Image (tube, rainbow, N blue to C red; front, side, top):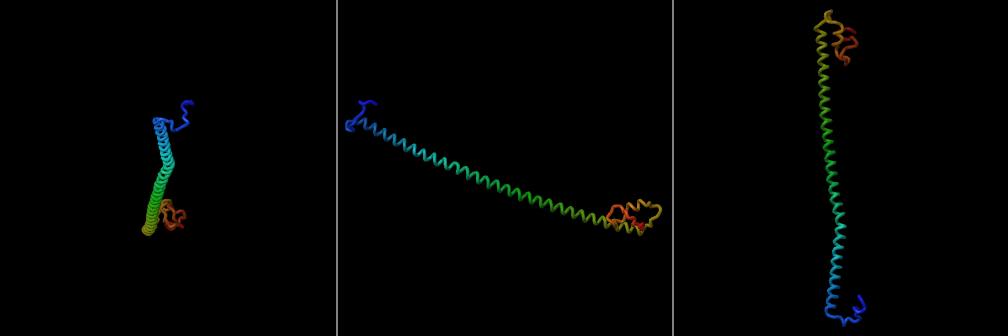
Length: 148
């Protein structure tokens, strides 16, 4: 822009120049408003996006935590069920052992009464059968059949 283009007086401007200046300032103001509006939108998005991500992460955390607690509860109940079953089986086994031991003692006494240990029954056989009175499979004290 040179000195010839400089107008010191606003009244000396032509109507075209005034319209172009008015439209130019209007466009500039319009652009400024658009930039401000866009800046506000970007600010809102830049604030809301991390907040939304945080909210989503929080709900994911709660869901995972609930699933872990449910898994712990189900595992605990499974362990309790297995423990109860094992105890029931051990109790049943103890009952069977006691019954077998009782039957063995009873049969041993019946055999002892009905059969006099003779020379036909070997000494080792008599000792191996045992009476069960000592809790051994084989009587080691020799008390069975009057050996003590």
